[in-house]
Length: 214
Image (cartoon, rainbow, N blue to C red; front, top):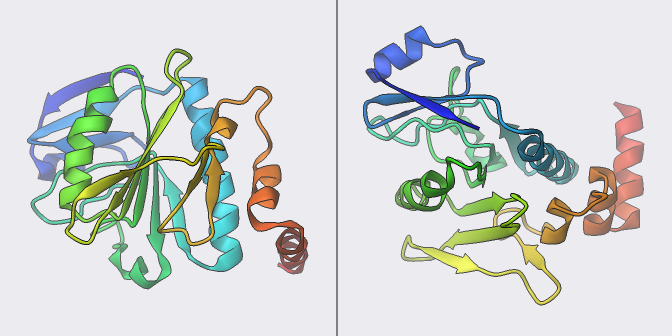
C-alpha cells in the first residue's frame, strides 16, 4: 500500500474526493491510499466477518470497514480505520456522512508505509480521543505480530498481551476472544469456524437458526 499527500483544507477534502476513495485528512493534508495488498485484505475480511458475526449475534452495536470517516471532534484529524466498532449505546455518534465521535474499538492493519503512522501517530491520537480499545495487526511475513491497547481509568493506553496460548480477550466486545495465530495460519480457519470456537456450539446453532428466520 502506497500513499500520496496533497495539501488541502478539510472543506476541500469533503467536496473534492469521491466517497469511495480511501483517504485521510491529517494536519492540513489529504493522504490518498493506493489499493492494499491481498494479504492485508484477507486479514481485514477475516476479522470483519468474525467480529460482525459476534456483534450481530449479541446485538452489541455496529462494525464497519474502510472507507468510513471517523472525526472524533471538530478539530481532530479525519481518519478511516481499517475496522471500527461502535457500541449500541453510542450509535448516535454516526452522522449522515461520518462517525462524529470516537469509535469504541479500532483495528489497523499495518502496511509497509503505515508502520509509524499506525504505531505512533494513531496510537497517540486514538488515546487522546478516548477510543477504548486499539488493535494493531502486522501480518507481514517477517513480522507477524498483534499489539493490543486498552484505555485505563486515567485515559492512557495500557498494552495488553495475549495469554500463553496466544489468546487475546477483548474488553470492549464482552466475551469475544481471538487466537492471534488465526490471522496468519495457513490454511486460515473460516470465519464461521472461528465464531463457533468463540461462542460455543449452542450459540452457533442459535445463530444459524436466527439467520434462517430472516
